[in-house]
Length: 303
Image (cartoon, rainbow, N blue to C red; front, side):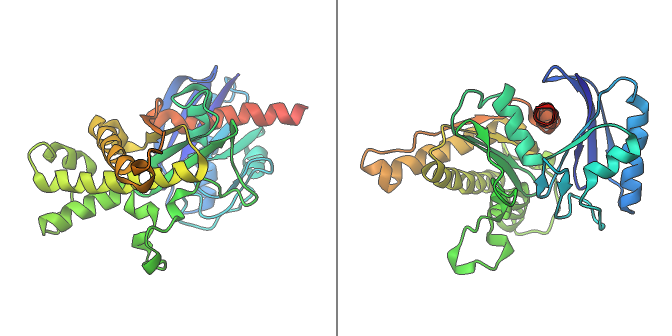
């Protein structure tokens, strides 16, 4: 089955023709409309019209609380304007095809569990490093959604009990690319704004950049250590834009090894047995995971 799959983000929408699980035959990117929900719907419809004779439907990955069975997306879904939560039904009527939604973090977890680097695990997670933090959980060999469709939303986990009302103390900040760049500016004592690409170009020679990456890696490793003891995870696959830099995975592994040996459990001979791996599918994970959700959901509907 070939599908048109969208990955909706706050600034850009990626799309691709996906078939046979992981085969992506064509890809494109457009800016996420900043104007209105109607313009968002029109954009999706216009892209679909180019491929409607080739595909069997639309799958869509997007941020927010996604009810897969009912095609409902709460929260802002990455859009800067009010939207109808019944996105799937609205698009179904506009495009006259079957439409299935999936949360972006859960889509990445499904892709890595179905075809990637956490395949075969009973308990595992995907941890996505971006402007914030995304993720998904596989427990007892199934994606975990929860009664409010919020399971695996690592972003909102607080990292400081003394400052529980401070947004800078949630995992979505402390473990993000935003934290990395802010920490670099803090250490450098300047207000210079650089992006991730410039940061990693400076990294080999810049001790402030090296310290910022160490601090971010420790923050992430610390939370992975907590997740291990909470959920008995076998693997965590790290994804997101900066995870394509091999040194990021190396540093997280290095800090995790230090934490597990120095922690109380490590000292009594019970170190965390968690393997940290990169995501296999990188920026394509959400497309592949949403495709798999479409297959699973339509199979369920037929049964």
